[in-house]
Amino acid sequence: MKNLLFTFFLFTATIIANAQIDLNKLGGDAIKGLDMGNLNMGSVIGELGKGIKPTMLSDAWQNKVGDWTKNVANIKDVPGAVKSLSGLVKNIKPEAFTSGFAALKGDWLKNLSRIKDMTGLGNSLKTLMGGLKPEALTSDFLKKQVNLGNALNLLK
Image 1: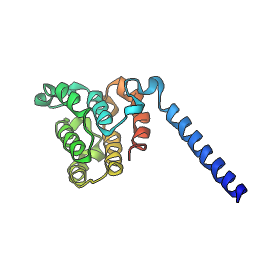
Image 2 (image 1 turned 90 degrees about the horizontal axis):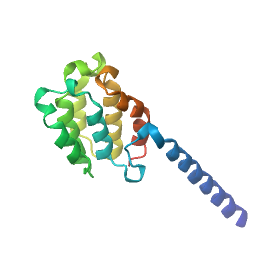
Image 3 (image 1 turned 90 degrees about the vertical axis):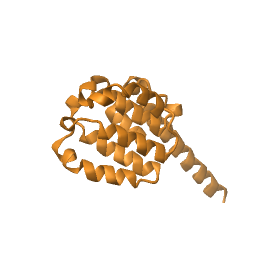
Image 4 (image 1 turned 180 degrees about the vertical axis):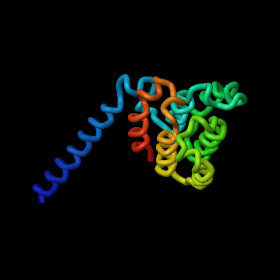
C-alpha cells in the first residue's frame, strides 16, 4: 500500500512540475503585458482587440476600441466574453480575414452565440485568430499569437 501511495505521489508531483514548466514557457517577452497569474478570457480577448491594426476595423469601431479594450479586461463570464468578442468581430473589415474564414464568418458568429463554457470560447477564439490575415495584425500581436493560443488551453 505504501508503494502504491508513493507511486501516486511521485506521479502527481511529476505532473505538477511539468505543468509549471509549461506555464513558465508561456511567460517572458513572448506574452509581455499578460499577467499569467490573472489570465482570463477578457485579457486574451483584449490582447486580440489591441492586436488588430486600426485600419482593419470599421470607422465607427476605431473610436470605440480604446474603451472596449478597457472594459473587456474585466470580463469574467462566458456571456460577457461572447458579447464582446461578437462586437469586435462584427466590426473587423472583411479584408482582414482569410478567404476561408470570411466565407464562414456568419456560421462562426452563430456558433459563438451558442457557446456555454470557457473551453468552447477558447476554441472559437483560436479559430478566429487563425482566420485573421497576418497583415491585419500588429507585429506585437504576431509575436504573442502562438503563446496566446496556448494560454487559451489553460482556461476552463
